[in-house]
Image (cartoon, rainbow, N blue to C red; front, top):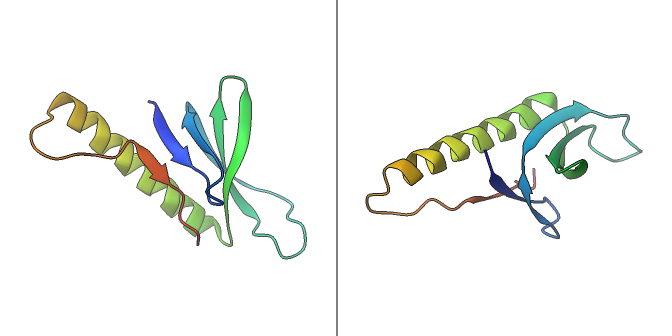
Length: 90
């Protein structure tokens, strides 16, 4: 795979080997649905959302970006696909 993910807080850019959305026990005033990026043998929380639906929607966006980027690498043509996906704020 190999997509770069920029965290929601804009402080981290990391090449992901796997992503997952999980429902965490959130602290007060923190969104319960978090997206984690796995790399090497580590994981980092890159985003948090209020609903499962939103977290899944963001994962769908990432999947589309990966597909578009991989297709672009095979058939470059004209244009550019950014290999960095920036996590949406909300």
